[in-house]
Image (cartoon, rainbow, N blue to C red; front, side):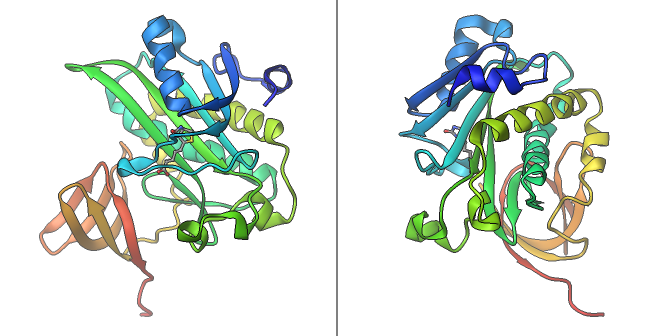
Length: 265
Ligand code: BTN
């Protein structure tokens, strides 16, 4: 991606003040972390984009496949100054920004908790927030966003094909990657500010964006095993509320692996 072309379309003030567009990187999140190591709080807002990642990472220890030339792989270095209570909603801000950028391409997307972006039940984008802490204090965070822009259905690796989609696959039109990245970053900046200043308000504003419906049965994969329950909403810090026979549990991480629609009344 051409950095000058992207800069010209940015209307945000903090994001992209430092901008690096590389042909190949192991992972844009690693590069964002290098910025944090090098510049500390001054790295806040630095954006890294790579046309190709050789070791892209996903959530829950998975790898993230991004097809060269067809995917947007982008990371933002963050050094937020506000209360840690807002940090949990940063990935949600990113997912909402992707959703807004997709809307600009005529694609209506929903969010699967915690921050997957889906179209018609297939994943079009994912978000990975990697923070570093020293005791209670953070030492910066890398907010990584991967979006499938121009893959044809048959180009996804066989194991992801059923569950993945792209803007091209949904619309038949190859989106302009620079314009998409700019729309995403321009939408992201105010959403990140809200994640800090009013996390509960940000969560409330996402109420209709979830693909989950209240009372829907779901199975959750957590580090400690599988949990079954019913969707009871998303709490003010972005936590999933799961109604179980033992009461309502609040979960801050995990993966929704199965949902069953509400039974007819
Ligand atoms: C997920 O859904 O599991 C999260 C995927 C996040 C992928 C992006 S691509 C840019 C950034 N660099 C990485 O290595 N991962 C994130």
